[in-house]
Length: 496
Ligand code: SF4
Image 1 (cartoon, helix red, strand yellow):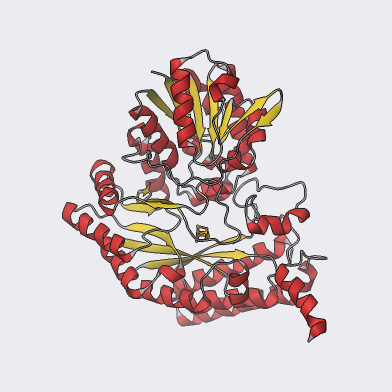
Image 2: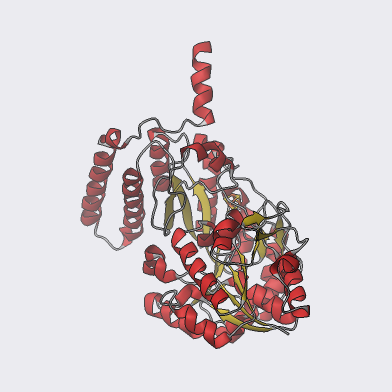
């Protein structure tokens, strides 16, 4: 039996935007792995960076756990880990170094480590798992248990999807995207999480308490910019009964007021969602929940089934109000579907959030105006705005990688720096983000403002929009990266 410390390196404290937002969730994938390793007979402890004051807390946790093996397993359900933020990588590297000094073996897994294992090996990790890495992790743990003094080369020998350093060189046989591992089943190790610490922060900031769950892993869609270093385009859904049982367990054990479903795409099939609703009714286990979904999955039957199951809020990957940009992204949805899905959710009493993305390759002023119009017409209850962020392994990254400067990762999620030469500079997009938020906030407050005040605030906002667009030329980038779409137009013009 080994003493294993499982942990992750997403420190809410190091992400000012998310700290301000104050909606932390326990590291779901990390505690799933903890449950799996415990099931294999090992003694587990957890270092949960999410609510730690800083990486300085790690030394104490390491000392207390005194592990044979440290597994830094990032929470693949936390979309922020997909951003591979440089501040979190720095923290992970410090944790790796401290764990190695303590004498523990160190295995690292996550999106950033899958993309760039060299950085983590250089910090001292013995092995980096590429992708979900469950099979390799199980093999490494077995080998270490059988031979605690095994040298690193023998420990990792012959395992595909495991990166190691051999004579200073990274050695790795990449596997390609592997489907979600069937061994990750059952209840995550919730008992290792300091639930009361989460509860008190949520209560203090929002007056309610939210926990997280996941009904599936992966997503089969192929948006050009979406990084999928863990599951590729594979998708695996748990049974509706199992997911309902976990929600019931959370409701009875921790009494959350709300659940965040961390799936990339929740539900997917109407029959599954209806069965989920039925099981929840039978167990009296329903807790109001939030999902992420796509406009083309928001049929009338699906929205009705979701509302029946207790869905209180749906975030839709809207991205843009320009069909041209959606097509360039290979989003596979239409502006009309977005507006229709938003209306249906609203009719069923489900709040709607739109994820908006600015600055995609080839996006022009007319496209940005279309996005502003979409937000005005569809009137989502909330929006989240980001700028296009090229991550390795995506088609988008391949299109712009020649333009990437020395900075290839955001430091934190509020960075919003343009990493390639988009149509406009970062300031322009930040300004547009702020105005979009003001537009949504104004719409939300129309019931509480007097008509005269609403008119005044609306007029002020219009002035700000007009000012931004009047000065747009000053924010244009010199020689923006041409998109294939634009290049085709350029080639096509002389022929017309
Ligand atoms: S639907 Fe969402 S999760 Fe799936 S590929 Fe597109 S952006 Fe990624």
